[in-house]
Length: 120
Image (cartoon, rainbow, N blue to C red; front, side, top):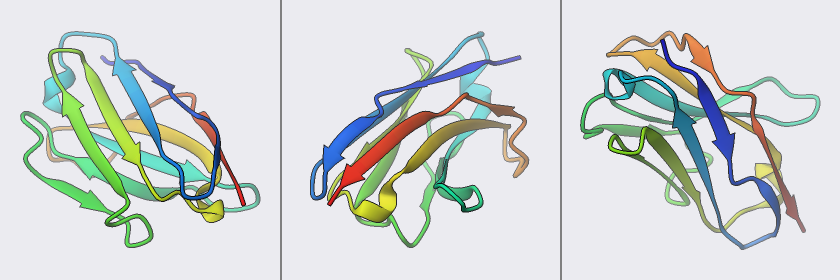
């Protein structure tokens, strides 16, 4: 079992950067692929990025963030990161991290979310 807690959100000007962190409890963190999702007001939750389980050699991104966001993981710290650069107003949302066991596409654990607000 793993529990997730996000941090690092805040208010940033357009063009700025933020790094989100998601720390997991438990000793099986490396067994989980990790994803970042976001939900803007009035919109459905959408996929942002994913990193594979283990060493995290595979990553994938939504087209809207490709080239601006980078997902990474540090299994020694049970933490996954989302480095966000060149932030845009439309990146404003609550960001959630989620865990999927192995290669599964089903995310079974979710964090509570962290707010990111980009001012124009």
